[in-house]
Length: 513
Image 1 (tube, rainbow, N blue to C red):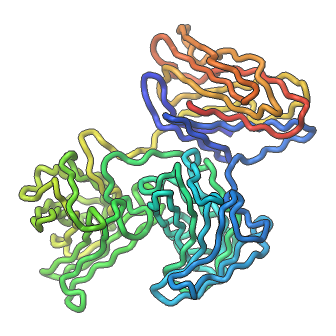
Image 2 (image 1 turned 180 degrees about the vertical axis):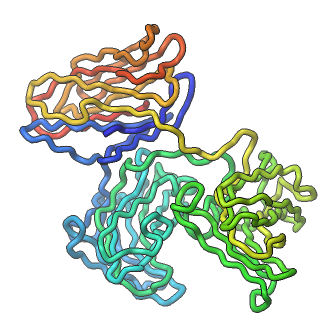
């Protein structure tokens, strides 16, 4: 099947995201951007396609500790409520069983490290975390936490993920969390821990986990530009900057006004896994709201280098309205109205120069105040951030398609064969570079020839094989179209290879594209 990507050319830059609809492929990144297309060659009598992925833990050894060598175990808030760990028949082989019983309002869970030395592991080449999940009774819920070597972490509730809105089911179901949702906070190049935490009702239950893997099944996405206050993709506070957040009610113990805070999931969000959902009734003359600090210590932050406060908003009914309040570290406030809300997502950009009287060099809070008509309603808010001119959220775009042809094949020892790197561009391509990697124990490169992709329409091009290293399993190539861009599909390069005497399976992938 095609492997979709958005890449960069010499004249223009795009975001790479290779996507395999029907099988897993390995994605590897270089210093600028990288992508990998996997083609599988089986050097024996039977052709089998093997998934290229990192298996974090399949639990088939029925012991604590990840497949990558890291330690693992159970944990709880006081050390006396650690979940009971067992290994049972799973979705595939054995599975981890976590039986938990914790007091309401507390937490327990399962911790694990990637490496035996508790150091960082590079996940930048992968696009999602997957695991198979089921519950003993159904409705069990938990959050998946990743922590980097700087101890920055993000925990994402599974109830945000499409298909898990009501928690686990009693039958096995695959949970897929795109790593994009961790990236604004966690350094994906140095992840040291993966944890599972139970801290919401039901407070007692058993959850089964199997085959935790990192893959490139999800399209890669870049983090939106600007200073993200909150993307709401974890389903709880604090916000992306570490500041506390929550609802405001001037009479929390009484009065007609009320407000609830919840999180809409993947199927309702503007981007990522979640969006903030505020349902409110301010009564006839009162107000309610939502507060958010920019810093964990509640001190001021300098946002004077940005021009706008941006957010995406929609209403449950349309016609809802509220005010955005900025508050600096000296307690000065200024408000601007958000009106014209519809049932469709739309961006509201508020010019920071319109917030008079507050210090943008020491801004402490961004608040939402519900004190306008209509008096009640539900609003959804997503991707709250400070942006400069021309900074936008990452938007889905039509993908260029690259194919390794053939996608898989059987070759025999000493057999020569050719592999094509084929490109179908969504936008004009002026040039391309890549490093083709392969298993040097099984394959060797004989030669590389330019294809017709950059030459289409009779154009001239420059194509060069920079190096061929059969000992390391690497061939580097670059091509540039002299004039204009290539807009139709074609073959960038043809690589002739030979199978060695050894038998096995080799994947082909591209780095430093």
